[in-house]
Length: 285
Picture 1 (tube, helix red, strand yellow):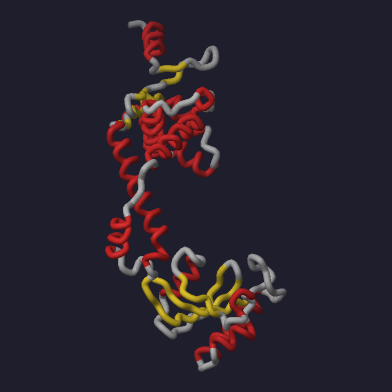
Picture 2 (cartoon, one colour):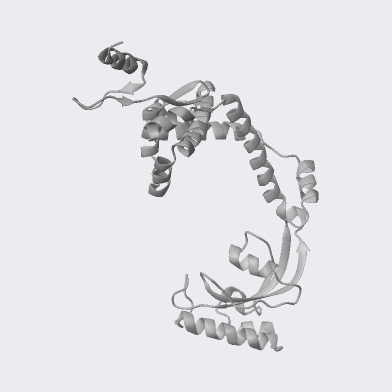
């Protein structure tokens, strides 16, 4: 077959796409198949260009295989939504990526319907995860500075650190934590209570604060550590497992997320997502 005829045949088959007049046609092979939908290189590139986050977009552009896996999952969910009749005329007019993401979101909402973990299942989860719902009764001293989030003092960061170090040394030598908190803490919510926080658990404070707190033994005082609110000193007074009634909503949410993840996994497995690695390599060079 002559070169011109070969190019025409490849264009007709979709393996090449025309470019500006006088330029050679570009290859446009199928790079992935998901739920029967054949995605060509040009479609994958169009979807990547529509990713709003610049760092993520650049990362996908540089890693075609990761991009194909990402888009393959999205296409699979969008196709499942179409089979359930979840597409609307307004959604169909959206740009490529927004349309597929909208379809996937509608599918997720449909899949999440009727997931209601029973009380027995929630209690079983609570019993099966000892330590996960640990709470610690604690006291805190906060020393703010003018650079902190929601500053409560005009002292410098360096001055706040020095004061925290001085107070921590005094506490280790036997100074009463409650009295020290009432005199020095900048946390108005706890200062009048001698820094008393009550029982708290993960998610009720910053991750850094919780890491320092849970590392303490009963009656132990932490060294000063910084958070975005300033310099902190904490004391662990006691620990307990949170009562079931208090964490029941959290457990139900986790069980719903797990059930939804299983349903999504089933949709993706049924989609038979296939990445055409050879085609990706040929156009990605």
